[in-house]
Structures are given as structure tokens and as C-alpha cells.
Length: 120
Image (cartoon, rainbow, N blue to C red; front, top):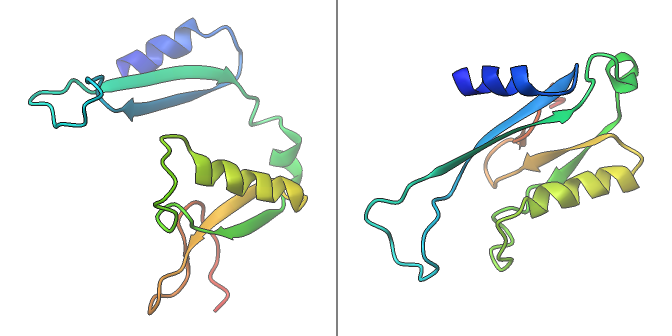
């Protein structure tokens, strides 16, 4: 929390968003488990006026997309490929956001990202 406060104090923007997330350890690329890998952590700010954004006042359209993150194990990626594809699908549908919907056999549909009232 102290690092976040320092990052916010140093930012040049009056309104910003803070991203903070763990990253994998920096290890040799031989795929063997390391005895004591040192994890890394990334934090940065980006300009984002969430409060005064038009979408905060008017709302946005949202679509749901299937959760392909584990269904496509053939895609080797460390990027947020499924999330990027979902956001693109939203843009193509004229929506502002896409919620990833995971449906499993025998389970009721539920959203993995976001909240919504269940119409069933």
C-alpha cells in the first residue's frame, strides 16, 4: 500500500488509474522449476478520468462472450488474448464492454468478469 501511495503522489495526472499485478519470476528459459524463483511485481499509472467520463454519466452497452481462456489450450500466450478478443467483439457490436461468461454443463451460467442480475 505504501508503494501505491508513493506512485499516486508521483503521478503527473490529476485523475488516473493504478494498475498493480504480480508477474512471473525472471528465470532461465529451460522450463525446469527453479528452487527459489523471485517473483516480480509491476505497478504503473495511466491517465483516466473515470468520474467525468461520458460513460459514467450515460452508461454503456455490454455484451457477453463465451469464456475461451481454457477452451483454447492450443494457443500459447502470456498475453490477455481472450480479453482482447472479447473487447474487440464488444467494439464490433457497438458495445462499450464485454463480460466473459463461463457456462459449464450442469451449472447455471455465471459471469466471470462483472456483475449482472441473473434473468433466469
